[in-house]
Amino acid sequence: MDRPLAGRIAVVTGASRGVGKGIALELGAAGATVYLTGRSAGAGPLPGTIAETAAEVTALGGTGVAVRCDHHDDGQVAAVFKRIAVEAGRLDVLVNNVFSAPDLAAWLTKPFWELPIRAWDEVLGIGARSHYVASVHAAPLLFAAGGGLIANISSSGAAAYQQNTVYGVGKAAVDKMTADTALELRPHHVAVVSLWPGLVRTELLAFAARRTPEGRAVLDIPGAGAFDLAAAESPRFVGRGVVALASDPDVLNRSGTVETTADLAAAYGFTDVDGTLPGEIAPS
Image 1 (cartoon, helix red, strand yellow):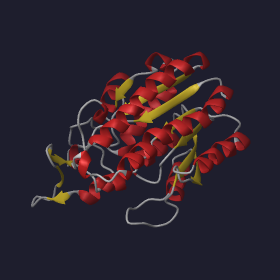
Image 2 (tube, rainbow, N blue to C red; image 1 turned 135 degrees about the horizontal axis):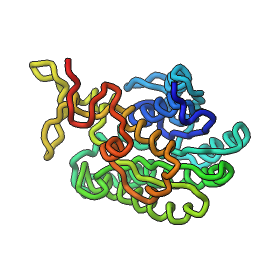
Image 3 (cartoon, rainbow, N blue to C red; image 1 turned 180 degrees about the horizontal axis):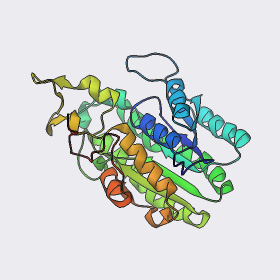
Image 4 (cartoon, helix red, strand yellow; image 1 turned 120 degrees about the vertical axis):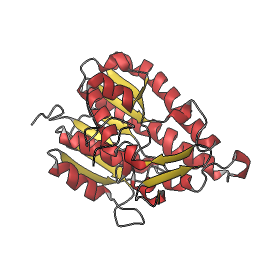
């Protein structure tokens, strides 16, 4: 079996479930050692813990290492990278994914004047700021590896209105950070890319979806319409995009850019786990 990332060291923030979990699993399937951060060390309202994800990473052929970390706490974040420095001495891939999606759910579609002020701090804190802090600590380890990749999970909400004002501002900040850090990191052979997934079948979306009389899972997004989750991306499709970037010897050519998962699939020739591409529905 092809293991293009065998021997590589990766960090995925917010990997208990959802997009982070999907990315961690694909990195593991590609042979990487994956340090997974998150707060979910025990059972909660949504399925998934960092320990469970780490076990699945190992089962797929990588090495999963669960590290409990609250990204609100800079000291805990620093400790994650100090541990990696001691245990591995290098880092090849950082995936900045952690995000307060459950908190955001209560604020969807609300105008900014109806949001609590803390919504700004939460969405930009566990998002743009947490990505920045992790990147600061990751940089020396990426230099030690001779270069590498930082993938910042962003959204088309950076360019068009989605969800609410703070969501868009947070994603736009991530994309600007990608462009500027890419410029500063290029001499060190570290590529930085913003990745825009499409609609992803996460545990949170599955929980929020309604069932039609025909048994389809449909997500109603006010102002945008109803979306059939059968045509959505799996979290592992996003992960395949990250693996493709991390495996590309010419990834610096994409540094500083925004890439959609669909565009990466077309460029690198991968599909989702069921063999489909975004928008397609797998045959029954």
